[in-house]
Image (cartoon, rainbow, N blue to C red; front, side, top):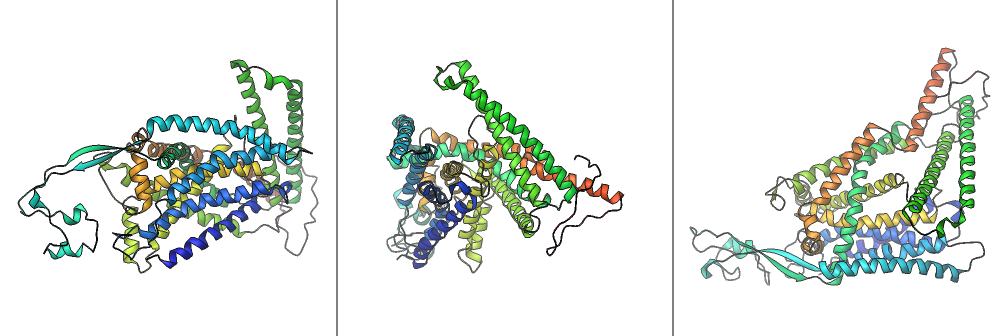
Length: 569
């Protein structure tokens, strides 16, 4: 029997996610894209919705039948929904967005020119997309020919015929209670030794070779590629997200007196003039060498192009930093009245919560996924979150609490991956930079970040399935990820020895040391510099017996700049 509550949730949650995705689009989009480019906007909303729906699908699978034995056979107390084929469908949709839809949309958006017809833009985008598809097809085809097999480890036991008892005919009350009509007999339920003194011999470990279907292989292949990005981006996000939120609170905007504001604004204008001159030189050099792209590719030409692209991206970083400096400066004076003081305090609360979640995740990874005896497939030192979720579901009257906790911990990893993409994206000087800026982000940057987010989702789902393996043991996700994908040939060695998990922890430690020891965020450096400059200015004012107060809501700031020289902070 299908649970009506799950049906309602399956309808309402996607609608709420679509609304949230649309809000994110409006919140970040650039004013130049208002009332234009509806097709890229629709792809951004749909791509972000697919990422979020894929993540919340895991706790939904747990609520459907993750804790009920015999779900779908003789037990009608579970959700009753068959989600087995939904997981391959989700992975195919994610693959379609990453390989086909988002690249085509980016090519289509970038091909815009004044007077360009829609058909010519579609043709240009299709040509570039065709090259991308050929590369993906070759990679998938070659790997599928060699790595499509699944090596399932099994253990066989040899027992005498009298060592088995049927739960339907047994007179043992404890055995009868564990069985139901039409039950699929489990070894732990039906194996009863007739003679109590008889000892079960050790099992014989074997490996069964199964050829995976193309859908299952796509899940494994996409998951393997996804793990490379997920382990790096999420490792960075686990270390930097709590600190970023705390620093946003600690270095919150502070009112700047008008005379200091005028002097700081002059400094920013000087930087803008210098960047303008640098931009003119870069443009002149580009115009002087228009044939660069037609030069045959050699080592020297490749180095020259790489250096040019690195210089251009550094220039874009400086421009982005200048815009952030000017925005922070406005918050300290011109827009002071419109600044909401509750925002920093909300970030402080989120910082504390994220720090706790990061600490719990690290402990769970070490105690449950890595500390096993024998390593790597032995018994864990502690089941930690698996035990906590089971206790929350059984001991507390609210039965869905464990499911909600699974959703919270899973979504937190998604936000960590997004934080990692934002952090690391600005560090690659030889690739295009796509920063997310509130109210000033073009569609190309939104599409790029959505594709990175989608690329991390498959590995995130597999990671959470492995981390909560003893809690979601009876779900369809556990069958797909823990049985088939985990044991695919070639890929299994990375999963058996937790290679990507070690990479995730290593990246997190390195990122934590690097970020906690020095400020790497340009925006945060700006906030620190402005704050130190204001404090230094106020100390100088205090020595002269002058007090500086922010303007009240009912008065305008009419202070005039002083003629006294200011100390440049």
